[in-house]
Amino acid sequence: MLRMYYVIIVSLPFILYYLCKVLYILRHDERYTEEERYGVARKAISILQRNGFIHTDAYGTENLPESGGYVMYANHQGKYDALGIISAHQNPCTIMIDDKRSHQIVTTQFISLIKGSRLDKTSMKTQLKTILDVIAQVKEGRRYIVFPEGGYYRNRNEVKEFLPGAFKCSIKSQSPIVPVVLIDSYKPFELNSIKPVKTQVHFLAPIPYEDYKEMNTREIADLTRSKIVEKIHEICCDG
Image (cartoon, rainbow, N blue to C red):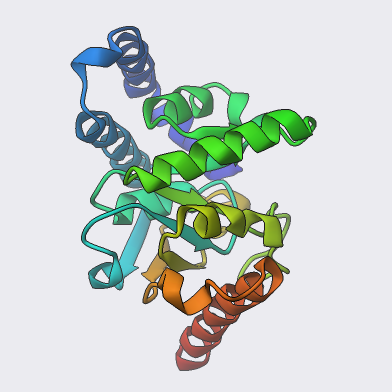
C-alpha cells in the first residue's frame, strides 16, 4: 500500500485535474466518443505508472480479435490488474466489477468514464440485469474484462478456481473468449515498497465460440483456467 499512498501524494495535482475532467465528460457524455474517454483513462494510467515506478510489458496483442466484441478472462492478483490490462489494450475496452469495490473515490469515476458494469452480488435480480446488459453490449461489439476468480486475496501468481457463471457473458453473446495472463500484477500495490516493479500482461490465443459451444460453463471455466495456468508455469519455469 506504500506505493499507492506515494502515488496519491505525488500525483495530487493531476488527480484533482483528472477528477474535474471526468466529471465534465460525464456531464457532457454526448460530446465524447468511446475512444476519447478511453484515451483519458489510459493517460491517467500512464501517469500512475510513471509516478509509481511501474512498468508493464505486454505480449500477444496480435492475438486480439481485430473486430467484434469479446470477453477477456484474466487471473486476479490485485488492484492494479485492470489498469495493467487497459494499459496494454490499445482499443477501447471496459470491465465488469463488483459493485462494492467500485465506489471508492477515483475508482468510481474511472469506472464511469469507461462505462464499466457494476455487479451487485447482494441482489440476484440486479445481478441478472447487469449480466444481460453486458451480453447485449458484447454482441454490439464492446470488449469486456472479467475476473472469474471473484477475488484476489494473496493470489499472487497462483490461480484459484474460476466461477462458471462468469462465462455466461461469452456463451450468450456467442463471442470469442480471450484468456489473459497476469504475472507479478500484485507487486505494485501489495508490496510495501516504492522500488521499481515490472508486471506482465499476456493475451493468449482466443477460444472461438465454435470451440466451446457444446461445453457447459464448468468445462469452459476449466479450459480457460488451464490455458492461463499453463502459461504462468511456462513463464515462471523459464524465469
